[in-house]
Length: 142
Image 1 (cartoon, rainbow, N blue to C red):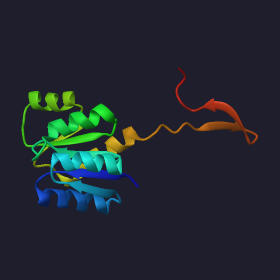
Image 2 (cartoon, rainbow, N blue to C red):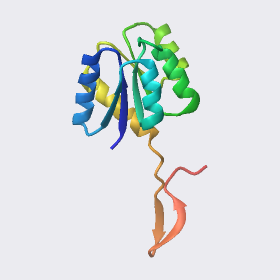
Image 3 (cartoon, rainbow, N blue to C red):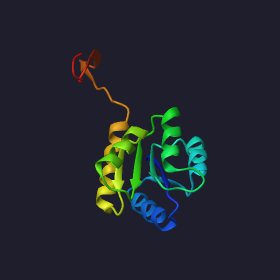
């Protein structure tokens, strides 16, 4: 199953997200500040990062920039701020998606599944003829 790094300085929120996603079968790694988040990302190579913007020691925005500079790990940003300008800024920082606080558990789970689905390696099926591969794929022609 996929590993998710959950980063927020609100321990109760981290616990709630970890519990929700743990019930779905995800392995959870946590961090409560930006510097620890970068270290955990390097150590654990998670499949997804859920990252709050407002963090001690290093902002979520900076953590997002640094992860994006070295990795294509999907990043779901959590924000308490509203407005199209803020959402655009998050995406321009390198986030793949965002959730405004407060958020529903159903929406969180759905966004996590969608991000992981899009990040999964493409599986190309082969069509076989009499037990041998024909070399043709079921993917769209170029």
